[in-house]
Image (cartoon, rainbow, N blue to C red; front, top):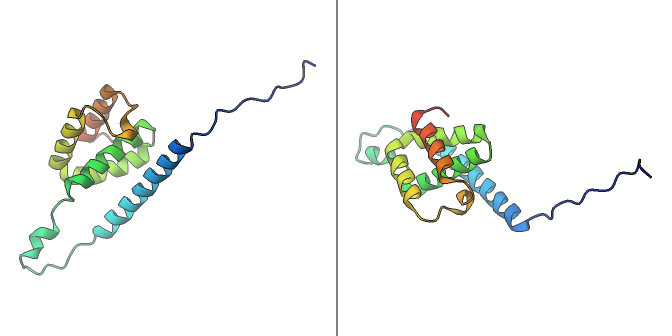
Length: 132
C-alpha cells in the first residue's frame, strides 16, 4: 500500500574509525588532565631549577596540540578547538615551527589526511590571529 514506509538501509559502522575516534578523545582528555595538573606554579626557590620549570612543553606535545586543534576545527568542535588554541598560544614560536613542519610534510597525520590543505592554512591563520 502507499502508506507503508520502507525501512532505510544504514551505512555499516566503520569500527576502525570508531576506535581511532575513541583513542583521540582519550588522548585529548589525558592531555587536558596533564595540562591542568601542570598549571600550578612552583614555589619560587630562586635556584637554578626555577628557569627549567617555566619552559614550554616539548615540541612533540605542541605537534599533538596542533593536530588536535586542526582536527577539532575540521569537525566543527569550536569550543574544543578554542581550548587547544589557548594551550598552543602559550608558545606561539614553537607552534609556528610545528605548523610549518606539518604543512611541509608530504603526508598529513591520519586525522588531517582528509582535510584540504587550504582549509588547514585558514585554520592556522585563525589560530595565529587569535580569532579562535
